[in-house]
Each structure stands twice: as structure tokens, then as C-alpha cells.
Image (cartoon, rainbow, N blue to C red; front, side, top):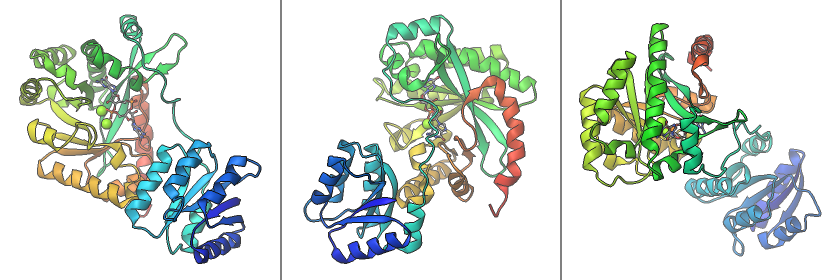
Length: 399
Ligand code: C2E
Ligand code: MG
Ligand code: MG
């Protein structure tokens, strides 16, 4: 690879330059980011990667990273620093947030094998299932989609970390478009919440998920079924009766129903959710605090509301094994769940490293792409069989 190397310390510059050459790379070195930047801006030469120190006297690494984002640099980025690990981590996260392709962050002195590992990385095939961030739906569009019965529920399995057993599924709403493609919740939940359509949506989800839960039970699959509810659903004192009635009608025991509560904004009248959730809990409906650690999903909620399940947000799960700060927050969340007698769930288990980390963590349940993506109801039974076949390898100690 052709690499642009920047470090204000001549000794480090020379040392890293030599290490990179030894790995077979072509290196162009600069002591100042302000000198290196124009080379990239002129766009006359191609650099596959930039390796940059963080603390530099004139333009520092963070400022340089901002410029890289501005000029749309598409090569790899490696951050190097003698600073403490947290600065390196936050800078790495910042670079990713800027949309840069970060190969890694290395602490000085840079060990040759760590350098090789970072440089050998292949560009990941971006496995995102969809193009992100399109415009939110308008109320009219959402209204029409629900009226035309184009709401479609997908289900994502949750498994026991300890035994691998499939314990349940989470219901995730999608809207089917006329052209057959799906619209994901990031484009319609906020619209629904802001325009008083969330109750309609929630009821449509219950109307799909509960009969489906019954079908699974009839087929011998004893799955908990979780439904996401918004805080705005919890402003109607009749909500518990509604849930009980619908579950009874579908023939689903309340003990196998879980409501995952996310609070995207503060509720106007905090006594209502407390009343409603307490009564649901009395009726033995499971209550899960979703996305724990983000937004308003905090310790205050944990103190005030009768949750019996805590879902650690995926932002603290994925990569926690490689990031001391994430790991600390993750473990503190698990500790809280344990001391409060709550079941813990980790979402965002994306790869084998996440799974192995969880296996050693004492977390109860796991959910994420590594286990299964959300899928149509019809695929669940088949997936359960595939999962059983994968299990011996996943539960093995040495792997
Ligand atoms: P959530 O309840 O935290 O659901 C998990 C989200 O993470 C889902 O996104 C799921 O597809 C995604 N996910 C699962 N595993 C992984 C993984 O390993 N890596 C990554 N990066 N993502 C993973 P989805 O389906 O787009 O839903 C987004 C959010 O929309 C949900 O977050 C939930 O808060 C909300 N939502 C979905 N359906 C409903 C609903 O029926 N009612 C309400 N009120 N909210 C809903
Ligand atoms: Mg959820
Ligand atoms: Mg979540």
C-alpha cells in the first residue's frame, strides 16, 4: 500500500516508516499535518492509507481527521498516539462518526505485530441490510400504510448465552412498499410518536405478533414474544386491559409476553407510565428497559419503573471486548441488572468476538446479527433448526 505517514517526532517518523517498509509498504512521511494535507487535497497521488499521530504542535490529529472527512478521503486511517487509551478511543470513534474508514488505533511504541494486524485488514464488505437515513415518512404516508395493511412484523431471536437455547423473539415493525421494498422503523417511529399515530401502530403490531406467538406455541415452539412500546403508548390507563384482552383472545399466556420500553423523549406525566407498567407487571407481563444507557433509558428509569429485564444498548456491546471504556460500562450495566434481580440482554452481538465476550460475561440473553437478523415469521422455525446445528461450534470452549 501507499501510505501517508504523519508524526511530529522525527524519531517515531523514521521508526514507523521503517516498520511499514519492512511490511512491504511505500511510505511518504511528513512531520506536519499542515504539509501533508495539501498533497491529499491536490488529489494528484493516490494514498491507500493515512497514518497519523494525534498530538502534534500545529495541526493536531483530530483537526487533521476533520479535514480528511471534509475532502472525502476514502482510504484507510490509522491513528497513532502515546496518549492514554481513552483519547485514542474517542478519536477513533470520532473518525468513524465522520464516515472515515478507520483501520485501527495504535499506541506508541507501536509493536510490529500490532502494526501488521492493522495494515493487513481487508476492507469490510459493508453488510448493512439497507441504505440508511432516508427521509422520514409523512403522517399521510404512514396512515395509508397502516390502513392498507402494509405493516409487516419481523422477528429477531434472543438466545440464552449459557445454554444457547432460543428463549424468544423480538417483534420489529416494517412497512412494505408498493415496489416490494421495506421501510425500517428509523423512518416511521418518530413520525408516529410525534403525530399521535403510535397507538395505532402499536395495536397493529400486537394484532400481528400475538396470533403469531400462538402459532409458534401450537407448533411446539415455546417462545417469549417481545413487542416494542413507546412511552407515548403508556399514557392511556386502559392500556393494561387492552394488552390482557388481546393476549387472552390470542391464547397467549401473559408470562410469555414482554414489552420493551424505549423512552425517546421524557413523558409528560410520569405517573401514568408508572401506574400502567406496574399494573402490567402485576399481571406478570415482562417489562424490558430497552437501549439501556442511551437517551432517557437511564438509571432514573431503572429506579422508578418496575422492569424485570434490562437490554444493554448495542453501543455498549459490540466491540466491548476491544474497548476498555465500553467494557466498563457494559459490566456495570450487567452488575446493576444482577443486583436488581433483572434478566440481562445484550443487543448488537455482531461477530464471534462479541459472542465470546458475552460467553464470559455472565449476561443472560444475547441478540444480534451474529445470532440472527430479524426475519419474517415464516422463517423462524427453520432458523431454529439451523441454530441448533450451529450450536456445538458456538458453545465449544476452545473456539
Ligand atoms: P430496538 O428495539 O433496540 O431493536 C433493535 C434494533 O437493532 C432493530 O432495528 C434490529 O434490527 C437492530 N439490530 C439487531 N441486531 C443488530 C446487530 O447485531 N447490529 C446492529 N447494528 N443492529 C442490530 P430496527 O428493526 O431498525 O428497529 C429500530 C428501533 O425501532 C427499535 O430498536 C425500536 O426501538 C424501534 N421499533 C421497532 N419496531 C417498533 C414497534 O413496533 N414499535 C415501536 N414503538 N418501536 C419500534
Ligand atoms: Mg427493542
Ligand atoms: Mg434496543
